[in-house]
Length: 341
Ligand SMILES: [Zn+2]
Image 1 (cartoon, rainbow, N blue to C red):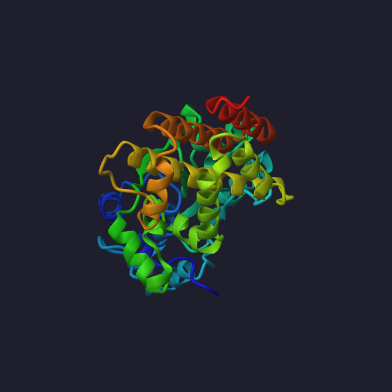
Image 2: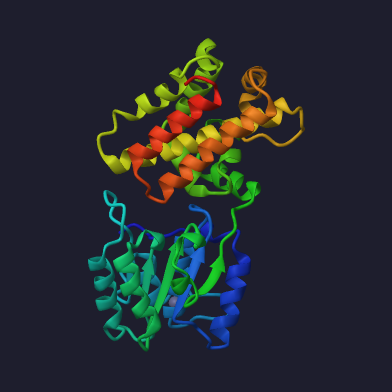
C-alpha cells in the first residue's frame, strides 16, 4: 500500500513540531486540536505525523521512532486506531450521519493501546445539525479519544467549537521551500516562476497548477485581457462563465470556477502593481512583458476594484452561497464596473 505521507512535507513547520514535543514530553496531550491555515501547506500531513508520534511505542522528544510496528502501520495508512474523515467529493457538506460515524469510531477502546485518533478534514463544511452534534462530542471528551480538526479558515467555524479546541496555526511555506519541492518533484524547465509565486506557499496549489492545465488557462485569460474587446464589452465575463459550462457536475464546476477566480485575482493584482509603477514582486514574473502591456488599459484603482470583485466572489463561493446567484452578481457588478450595463 502506498505511504500515507512524505516526511518532506513536514518541513517548514518546525515550530509546531517543537510545540508538540513540549506537550508530549510534559504528558499534557489535549483531547482536541484545530490545525488551521491555508490549504496545501501540510496540515493533513502533520496530523498523521502527530498521530504517529502519539501512537509510537518508542517515541522521543524528537518524534516517532518510524520503525516500530505502530509507526509502520501509520506510515502505510492501516493503523486501526486512526480514523480519517473528509467531506465526500460530490457533497458540499459533512452531514449528521458522518458525525455520528465519527462519534461511533472514537467511542471504542484503542485496539493497540494508547489513543483513538480522529482526523477530520475541512471541518468548516459541517452543516448546522452536524456541527451541533459534533459540539456535544467535544464537550464530553471520551477518555482516550483525540480529535485533530483541519480547517482553512477559523472564522467559518462556530465560536462554540473553536473555544473547545486548542488552536495551532499553520503558516504558508516560504518560497524557498516551495522551490525545493518543485525541484524534487518536477523537471526544472517544467516549473515556471509563476507557478511558485502563485502557489502562495501551498504545495497543493503547485500540484494543482501542474495538473490542471493551469498554464494554458493563465495564457487563455491573458489572451482575453489583451483582446481589443476587453475594455468595451462583456465578452470577458461571458468567456469565463462559458468556459465553465462544460462541467456538468455542480461541485466540479464550482471548484474550477474558484480556481479561475483565484488565478484572475493574482493577474489583476500584478496588473495593479505594474500600473502603479511600483517595484513589488509579481505573482507572474514569467509573463511580465505581456502584463506590462495590458496594465496600461486601466488605472491602479480600476485594477484594484477588479481584484476585489474576484476576491469577494471567491469568498462567497467558498462559503457555499448559491452558485448561480453568485455568478450572476459577479457578471452584473463586473459590467457595472466597466460601464457596460
Ligand atoms: Zn514508533
